[in-house]
Image (tube, rainbow, N blue to C red):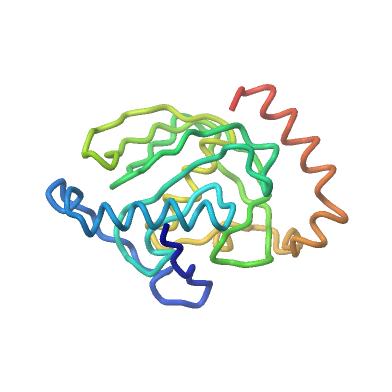
Length: 191
């Protein structure tokens, strides 16, 4: 198990567009080890996902998993997914406001608007192509992680700065209302 250091806001690698990974490069021991390190680091930090540039490697690789995550108990489960060279297509104009945090922006949360219905095309760690429709909070998670690969942080998407809050104050003042609203949303859209 290798847990890597997570770089935080202000580090230049978080603002770079990560480069694509060829199928040949994807099969190398170095990239396969990077994927294992991303998974270990995500699990150790209780993250719902982590992009390679969050551990200082500007490659278009991210891992996503939600499995009874203590940080996000309201999120629907997502099986461990390795996403390489993702492309997102918005399927309609429906949006949802999500209160997001980020492993690279410790102890800060804020509200962002995310598309509810997306198509994501990507390669898995074996180079197999996937073309999938994601909905709801799952779609939001994919958008958050893919933003990282384009050098964007959730901070860039917060349109109302009064929604910024620390984790402690979110838990104290905002969590109950957010969880009630987002649980109803998850019930309605199914993911």
